[in-house]
Each structure stands twice: as structure tokens, then as C-alpha cells.
Image (cartoon, rainbow, N blue to C red; front, side):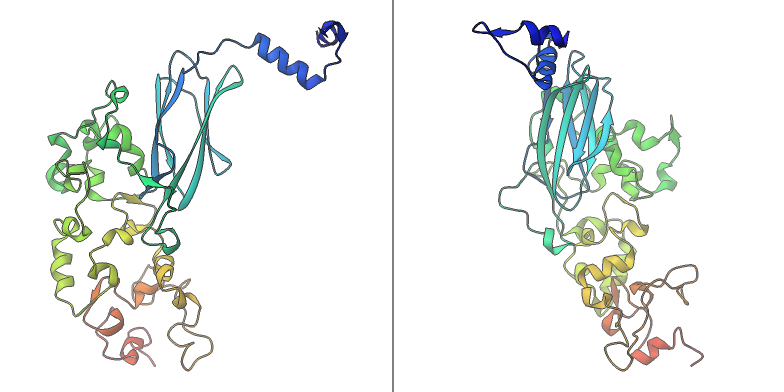
Length: 354
């Protein structure tokens, strides 16, 4: 067939020798199945949007059997391949800190029939270099807008059952069809279920009591009151009483920003920390990660280890900054975790035989 095309195609009665790539293009163009314009639409998110958390939700319309495969790439790497089974495909994409260039491509019968790219900026109060997004980026609040195409499958307004007791004793963490009871009745679950797919899940998220923290009557729907402590201390009353009684408090506690260190939803790490304890601390206290902390900057060349050793006091745990310092509050300078009036008193907590 290729030879016949090369032989017979003429322009102005002059035989034009077509290259193989051009011939292949003509075959694809002439014999490819018809594709309905507008059959695929990316409804969310918009381009140049700012996100605070680690996930961004996508909503893609693929009506009329217009897609066989949906491929998702982030910063040049394919991260998802989805076989659509609904007219709308909704999926979550994990975000790196900073700019994320995300491309969604739709294939039908082996051909790419649609592609769309958006750039999402994930900002962070924890990482100073990502605290201020470029000027072109704007925040976007999904629940502030009208999305009629979503209401066929989703309830977009939270209901009374999205406010539950967060105590497992009073509510019960049993399962229904492999999911928690909270998930079975939650209006938020169908869109935000990926948010809880981590080893450590915050109590309200575990039972899908989203309205424990999110205010449906706020001027920006479902926003969380600031400072964070105004919301966190509703449940963490013991911590509030303890920390407020101390002479010294850690910076984030002082300004009421619990979410600088703790994810309000779920995390890979204990206590819902964004990073392992040592990495989290040296993120702000970079000079303490040099290996010369405690001793190396005074009378010892080696310094004192601050990680990669068993904790001699907290049996079963690894040595970290929290071995000596309270991450929240203390009655002692430098937020020492023990009753230590001096550095030597602190040393004796571990080196009691010296």
C-alpha cells in the first residue's frame, strides 16, 4: 500500500516522492476513527493554581466512549494510567513542593485525541523557599463555585453526619463493606478518600468527621479558623493546659500554627509529622544538622550524635532532636525535655554512670 501511494499521488501532474513518515501520517489521518470535538474536557483544576496540601483533585469528562486510556504525567514522568469506566473520571495527583507541571493525555484506538497541561504550585510554611509562590499563581476554592456537572454523582454540600464524635469509643471504628463507618455515610469521602490513604491518619479524618475542623458556614466555605490552635485545642485540651502552663514554648506553638509540622489529615510518619522528627527539626534549624551540635561547637571536635542511634532513654525509639528537646513547651531553657537546670544536668539523663 505504501508503494502504491508513493507511485500514484501527484501534485500538478508531477509525481511527488513522499517520505515514509508523511505517508504514515496520511494513512492515520485518512483512516483514523472520527473523534467528536469537545468529547473530552478538563473541568478541574485551573492552570496556575496554589495548593496547600499534598494532593490535587482532577475532574476529566470523557463522554461517549471517547477514551481508552488516560495517562497522567508530572514533571515529565508518567505517574498514572487510568482505564475510564465512567463519563467523568476523577483522580488525585500527589504534589511535590513548588511547581508541578501536570499533563493529562487521552488515547483512543492508540491515538492521542486530547492533551491538557496545568501547573500547580504547592506552597509550604515549613519550607521557606516554597512559602511564597510566583506572582502568576492564585488560590482556587472548589466549593466556592458552581459545578453542575459534578452533582449527578456527588453531593457537594456537607451534611450533619459529617460532624461526628471523634472518639472511637463513642462512634466506633467498625467497617462497612471494607470501609470505615464514617466513609460509608460521608459526603466528602468520594472525592477526598485519597487523603486518608496513609499509615497515620488524624482522628477526625479516620471517621470522616470533616466538619469537626472545617466550617461550612464560613465566608469561604469549609475554611478552617486561624490560628490553628483555635481548632486543634477543641480536642487537644490536655495539651493546651500543659503547654500554656510552661515558661517556654516552641515557635510554631507560640504563634498557633500546628499545621507547620503536623498534617491535619494524614501522614507517612508518626504524630502526623510532615517528615521524620530529625529531618523536620533541621529543616528550620539547619545549623543543628551539621554534626557539631551540643559539643562540636564548644570543646569537642566530634560533636554529639543526634540521629542514627538508639535512644538510651526512650527505649525502642531512635535518637532524634526530641530525645533532648520538647517540640512543644518546657519549663527549661532551650526547650529541654527533662528537668535540667544546666547542660550537665541534661547529660546525666543518659550518661548517668559518668
